[in-house]
Image 1 (tube, rainbow, N blue to C red):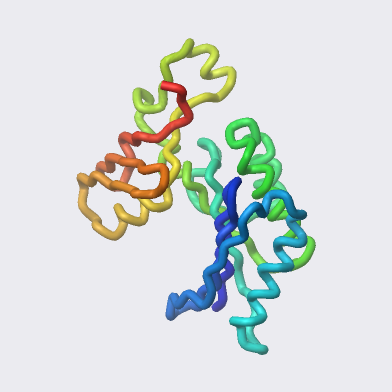
Image 2 (cartoon, helix red, strand yellow):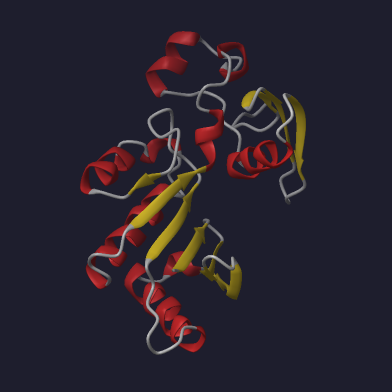
Amino acid sequence: MKILVINPSPSELEYSFYGIPEYKTQALEVIKSWQIEEAQSVLERILKDGEKVLKKDEKIDVIAVRAAMGGTEFKNSVIATQDVKKKLTKLFAQAPMHLPMVVNLLNAVEKRMKGVPVVLSFDSGFFAELPQRETIYGMESSLARKLNLRRYGYHGLFHKAAAQEYRGNKIISICLEPRPEVAAILDGKAIMVTSGATPI
């Protein structure tokens, strides 16, 4: 099985090709300033690179896309469907620099690669069930509810994988990305995270 993994962010898009069951990375590339291009042309560049690493009889069986924000709607990975895309558009206000580009990418894949399933994985999913005290910002609660403002972490997929790897019941997970983040995990569930969209 061949998997195309795409990690879009507002500043760059990373992609790689994996083979299963060997889990071997066949290519890892970065496209800088990809958001100024049409999603269709970006996808064509990715597929052209795929031709260099895939054998003639090989094809991409599934595409995995990382999405930073899924709100409380998407707690786990899902197959991208029309209904999922509609729900994502309703979350644009929560991630205005990220989600529109993800949806554009999904539309490009649907147009160019009909029948190839796309799996969306959400960084926010791991933090969708944080204890309420950990989601609250220092603002009027009615305004927070109206604007749907609450705390999420930014590296949920990393923390979830770390917790599954360790399998302990009390974990402090530290992600040393350019925006470092610490999460407290109890029995596989996040109970605290240091990141959040806040001026404080």
